[in-house]
Amino acid sequence: MVSTLKPSTTDYKFGYFDLEGTTVDNITLSNLASAKFEITPSIGIDATSMGLPLPSAIWVFYAGSPTHAVTPIANRYIVLYKGTELSDKADEIIVFNADNITAAQGVGTYTLKVKHFTR
Image 1 (cartoon, rainbow, N blue to C red):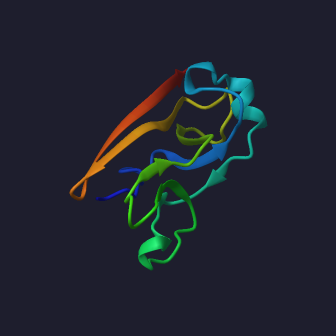
Image 2: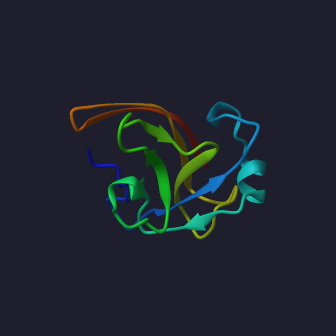
Image 3: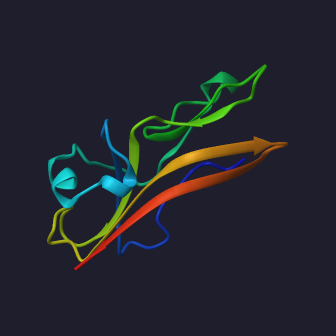
């Protein structure tokens, strides 16, 4: 199961932030302006339970044996944006998080919640 995300173009900056007490549907531009946004080239899976190294940024957690559960990191939002900064001045902002992950026999199915802002 591949769980590393990275942008396919350099036109967008990529990263994440954590925010409790809201959902993607309720994210506002003011939430984004006050969020502690972490830019990263990619975001991956915490599979330390399998002896793999911990990536610098994670968005999902793999529990390992015996459950092999794969769960999203709570309150973590992934962001792609086009512009000079993450603000209302950005040309485009895409915010999403993993709402649900189903993993079976090495195949992951992700249900993502997405919000899109454009200028």
